[in-house]
Structures are given as C-alpha cells and as structure tokens.
Amino acid sequence: MSQKKKAYVETYGCQMNISDGELMSGVLASRGYEIVASPEQADVVLVNTCAVREHAEQRVLGRVAQLGGLKENRPDLVIGVTGCMAQRMGTDLLRKAPYVDMVMGPDGYRSLPDALGTVLRSRNGSSAPAEGAPAAPRLVRLEGPRRKSSPGVAVLDLDPYESYEGLALRRTSRVSAWVSIQRGCDHRCTFCIVPSVRGPEKNRDSRAVLDEVRAVADEGITEVTLLGQTVNSYRAGDWGFPRLLRAVARVPGIRRVRFTSPHPNDVTPELVEAMASEAAVCEQLHLPLQAGSDRTLKRMLRRHTVAGYLAKVEMVRRAIPDIALSTDLIVAFPGETEAEFRDTLAVVREVRFDDAFTYRYSPREGTPATRLPLEDQVPRDEGQARLDELIRLTRGIQREINERELGRREEVLVEKKGKEEGFMLGRTRRNKVAVFPGGEDLLGSYLTLELTRTTGATFAGVTVVGPASVEPA
Ligand code: SF4
Picture 1 (cartoon, protein in one colour):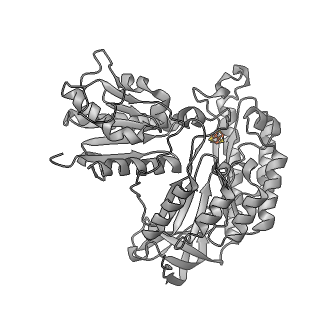
Picture 2 (tube, rainbow, N blue to C red):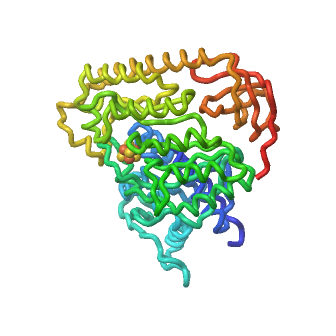
Picture 3 (cartoon, rainbow, N blue to C red):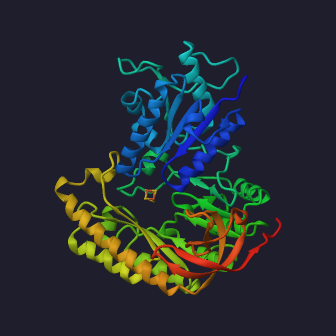
C-alpha cells in the first residue's frame, strides 16, 4: 500500500458490539490501515450495527443513508455495514441500500481486510484475489438500475468455532477495557434476535482470556469488564465462570472487575462467593429479570421463575449487602395481562433496583415471539402506558436510593471529561456516575468523592481524597 488507507468505524448497540468495533479497528490496523476519527477523513467507513430493537435499526439505516451521501463527492469511498443488523438483513441490505458495498455478520471480522480487498478489486473490474491471498469472501452480484458502483460483498456465514483468538483489539478507552470471553447464546428467549444473528455459545480459552487481561494491565488499564451474552454460563474445559472471575480479579494491576450480562440461572453460590471474596470484583450486578410474572417468563422462554430470581437476589444480597442491582424489563409482551404487568411492578417494588433498562415489547422479524397469536398483541397505547408507569416507578425508586446515598464517600475511577468545562466524570465501584470538579490530568486515576447532590440518576461530588496512585502491575 503506497499510502495508508484510512478507516473509520462507527459502533451502535451493546458492550459486545463496542468490543467488536475495537476488534475490527485492530484487524484493520494490523493490515496497514490508519484508523481515523471521522467519516470525512476515511477511505473506508464501517457502521457496526445492532439488531435488537427495530427503532434503533431504523435510526442506523438512516445514518447509513446519510453516510451514503458522502459518495456523491467521493465515489471511491467504501461503505460497509457490519454486526447484527448486517447479519439479519443480509443481501437485502445490499439491494435496499445501493451505496452499501459490503455487509458482514459478527463472525466475519477476521476476513475484513480481504472483503474490502474484494470490493476494491471488483471496482477495478477484477474479482481474482492476489496470488497467495486467503479465499475471497462471497461476492454477491446484484443487478438492476439502483446499483451502479459495484456488486456487493456479503460475509454472512456463522462460524461455530470463531472466537477471534490471536487478534489484537484497538481499544478506545485508556481507562477501562471490555474483554469478551464468550460469543453467541444457547438460550432461545422468544423476544431475542441474538441467537439467530450471533449463533450458539462459544467460549474462549481461559488462558487466552487471562493473557488478554494481563496485557490490558501492562498497558496501565486497571478496570476490566468481562463480556458474554450469558457471561456466567462460561465454561471451557475445567474452567467455569467463578474460577475465571477469581483469576481475572487476581491479575496484578487489575483493581476493578465487572461482568455483563449474567443469566439468573447461572448465579450460583460459588459465583456469589467469588464475587464477595475477591476484592477487585465490584459490588454491582446487572441481572436481567425481563418480567415479574411466571406465565410471561414462560412465554418468553426465560427458563427461570420469579421465585427463582428473587432467591438469587436474596443470596447475592446476603453475601454482599451493599451491592447495587440493575435489570432489564420488557412490558407488553404478547399475552401479558394487566394483572401480570402489575406483578412486574410488584417485583420491582420488592427488589428495589438501583437502575433499570425498560422497554415496550416490539416484534423482531426472525424471533419466535412473532409467531404468537396476533390477538395476543397488546395494543400500542396500552403498552406505552405500561412502560410509562414502569419508568415512573423505577426512576422513583432510583431517586429514593440515591438520595439516601448522599453524604457517602465513594471511590471513583475517573473515566472522561464532563459536559461542562472543568468537570470530570467518575464511576463508583457500585456503577454510579458522579461528576466533580477536575481536569483531564485525572483520567484513569482513583479518587474518593463525597456525594453531595443527585439528579436522581447521577451524582455530583467533591474530592475528599486523591488522586490515588495506581499500584504498579
Ligand atoms: S439469554 Fe435470552 S435475551 Fe440473552 S442473549 Fe440469549 S436469547 Fe437473548
């Protein structure tokens, strides 16, 4: 490559997708690309997408169309769409969006440079890869007047063995690292698109995970979050998740460990014991509940009951009384009655979550729940009213909890600049965000703040101790 090609990666969706975006940047950087900070600077623009919510998908499609507009002045620009939406829509996306040159699902990133090479060669009228190059990704010839620039390239095969071992990520944060330990999911929750776009569960080798965490610590990053769709179902040989969590927590230089998202069924006494006894494991747990009615949970195929969930919460709180709990909740799942919705409110009142991510059910093409009888659909207005009521409840509880925490002294890891000049954002071990006066020189350091005010969701604080020097690895 005479002059370095420039690539820009824009990521939407969950932490796993953020980690995948870092993986794509790493793969491209290792093959000579320069990673740039805006699409205007780039020769290649990749939009790394999420398919979980229809609304989010529509917004991303709008963004892809907007980026497609850049081609008017720069016909050589390559636009690729990657991730779960690319996997779900496949070649339909190439047909509907003629400015898109490549679609690639979550198991294709190893071949990203080769797929881009195929796009460029097809523009030059050649489809033959250079001698010795890996097999070319599947090139999809699309006919019709809407597609003028090039045929599209599609990399959509799910690979049950791909765990991206041996590839270096290009991390976006110097403070905190996502470490993916598992890809895909063996559950079949009926509302969820993940199993069909990310395939079955694949767990990484524990040695590779620990090597990655040691490398993270060597770079001076002190916080890691272990990622997996059902992260605590991790198993590789003799290694279950509690053992891995303990080993990660003991890596020299690692001061905070989090993990997301666990499945309630795999919250075991052994895991809770590891969480309680390892000093680096933060006092925080995001434990998706989804619904507070057994009948709804059954229709969701969640494989746990309300009583089972509450027993796990009790076990965790007995071992770690100060733990901050958060959850995911869906209202208006097909067939949910008003009484069942009220059951969800009752469970929320009983558990009192520190934070909750709340959604109104919307059908996703390709998920089993779309086959539930049409007459079971909860009318949109009714669903919205339930969501509004749930949000009022969860936010009210969050405010009450946080107001009671005013005056506490909490250690924060300084993550980024605040919105206002002269302020920084830090995160407590219990995953609460606090803004405080300070400069960028504090990034990555640990301070003790006194929490002085709350918006209900976040805090303002003043520094009482710090910054603490980070212990050498
Ligand atoms: S556990 Fe259920 S909700 Fe979570 S990724 Fe798997 S199928 Fe989706």
